[in-house]
Length: 112
Image: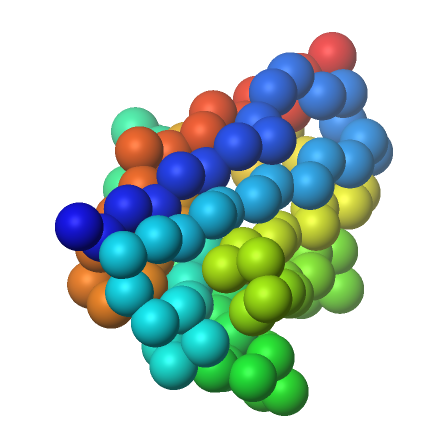
């Protein structure tokens, strides 16, 4: 069955960095666009970043442009989200999405 497992979240101070990972299984990972979303009580669900099948095309929400980088390693069936210059408003549960499936999410908390 399709499974997406996120990791890498945690508590970080403003201005800090985290790298999220999402390992996929149960489908042909290299054939699908992958996404990172986030969800918070204040803002609901927001799409953060998108990466094409080969990784050659990436798109970002305006609120993370220049700070976050999405990438993928098709040999490892893994998509990443490098998050730099984190702000308190980046606090949320971060989810990866592919083929319409969701992982369980990983909590990111930005606080001093």
